[in-house]
Length: 118
Image (cartoon, rainbow, N blue to C red; front, side):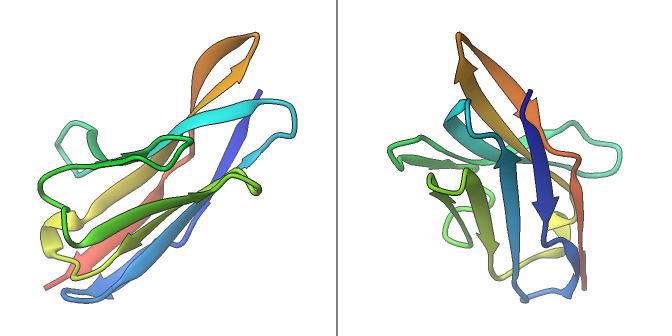
């Protein structure tokens, strides 16, 4: 099993910044793709950004130019730098990792709350 531990959420004013981190507790699984998703109240969970093991990134249109996803493969950690935050960025942010050991499976973090006040 892979346990994911997220940190970095909180309350920030519009225009502010936050940095989320998500670390995987494993030394045996190979972590392939990593990503961040978010869920606003009353809405479905949506993709925010993904990054491959090689560093290729993909972003939702709503966060392009404001958010940056990065990873440290030596620490099995993914980051999400969020700048120019807007109230509509408010929600619970979840990290997801695709890990391989004999087969590939997805693992989710517990979620961290991000609240952007206007």
